Length: 316
Image 1 (tube, one colour):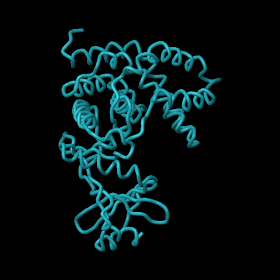
Image 2 (cartoon, helix red, strand yellow):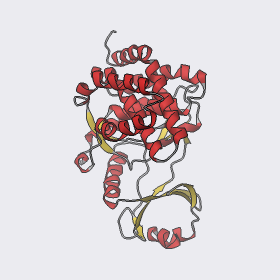
Image 3 (cartoon, helix red, strand yellow):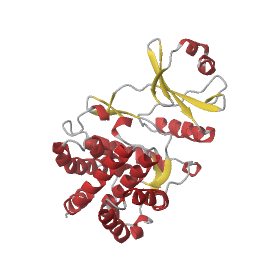
Image 4 (cartoon, helix red, strand yellow):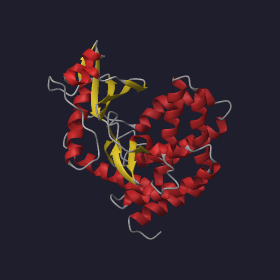
């Protein structure tokens, strides 16, 4: 590890990496802290480096990649690539009471500002496409159906019919652009109730912009699903989140109609992912969230449409 770190300068040779999770370490050097990550693709690192420079120049609270002494934003060792970021200070959103501190609007407006910056980025064509619908159809749905076909066949059929009836045609017309694709509370840093940092841009792809908003909504619900009181508060969180987003960037009416169906796709994708990992506990947890939202559909749908309508200045 010492030889790796010296590629960023001799001062890093004395830093002791503390593992945070697989492939991610924190370094402390005097009064400064850094995050070291292992990456698999040098091309993707280059794309991220240029994008982060753009976002920083356009006022986004991000941490830029540090170049090595060779002038590139990665270090290579034994066939693996590593990147280094300055550590951003702040409290991660998943350590805060997102309901009690009314942070939904702040997160929604921050996402809208990020989307505006991402949409204006001139080199978006460098990034791969992410088609959520195709990914679920070809990968997630067969995996989930095979796992749950006996126990939950009726419930899954109902969800499949709903998606087929209400999402297939509108999906292709949804606004597409660069999206963060990992916009959850743990990647958002807060200081005194205001967003201070956005982390982890290594999953940026071209996709429907609604993905990020729905991903945030379902991530908040999943993290607090075991608390009945917070489940009851979640619709209010979604309303405030949409309102915050709409105060900066207007959502299209079609996006309000398909909001819940996009969440269904996200939950199916995560269920399949955890099945692949062999983690049936988390797969079952994501299925439970999916079924709960589907049970609440008739209540949630008009609430979401109203929130989008109000943010557009339309009386509902």
